Length: 112
Length: 113
Image (cartoon, rainbow over the protein chains, first blue to last red):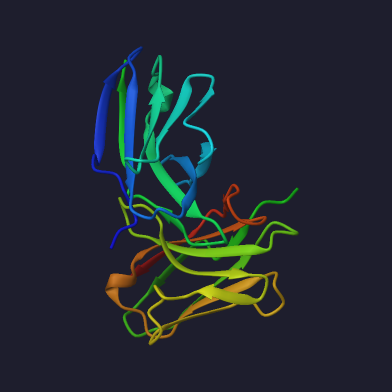
């Protein structure tokens, strides 16, 4: 089965608003969680990551929230800008060099 | 520092033809991944190596796909007899250890006609 799931294939947000991207995972052994950003015809690049020993990590306009009991993590982008328009991939990895799993992606569009 | 290098960038095949993809990871990165990314989907793991050893190839269609990393550096992914369903971008990524950033190459965009 799919280990990491992004239930929303797309999201549209007004410029200046908050974009909330969600990801669910299945494996209790996952302890590293990340969000990658992908522009069309480009490879994914790491946006922000968090380990399972924290519930939240902030970096500028980005915040990752981790809910281990719910097997869920999310990315909040405040003051969304048109340049935030891209596909966002969530990813998770477990201890011991386990597989690095990606979700199918959420396409975010920020409307000016 | 050089990034992950992949070649070729593009490949167009007829069904039944063979193709090889090459990846040169970031120097010193022990873990190398091959992903298949169909259009409008996220990367799906095919196989990954730690040094020269295959750690997991359970998602690799073994009847037609093969991957090697003989010296724990460069890697080759080969499709023996391509099918239209193999049309996708093939991404190589490397990392240093586990639970760390994956660095992706530019990918090889494969079209099987």
